[in-house]
Length: 101
Image 1 (cartoon, helix red, strand yellow):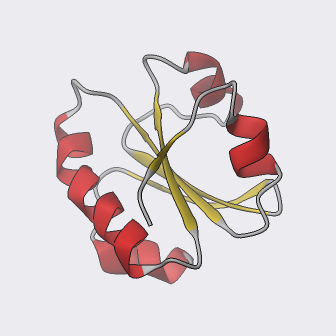
Image 2 (tube, rainbow, N blue to C red):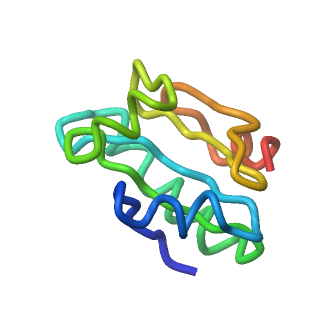
């Protein structure tokens, strides 16, 4: 499954109304650790078709980043049934994120 780009326009449908868990990577183009995290996120999307994997560019979607208290990036947040249930800040290996699932 490919990584979905989340915006404030599709957030409600793609995240809040999702039947499956949604893993969101909050990132920015200028962020070095985010660039390191990107292939990890892509691999998670490929390895775990049972979850929805998405990205939110904090420069484009500042409101969403603020709403979920994102202070540092990359921040990965796991949503289940429309609720943020777990989060990880900074670069972490794929195995650490898989433990959140």
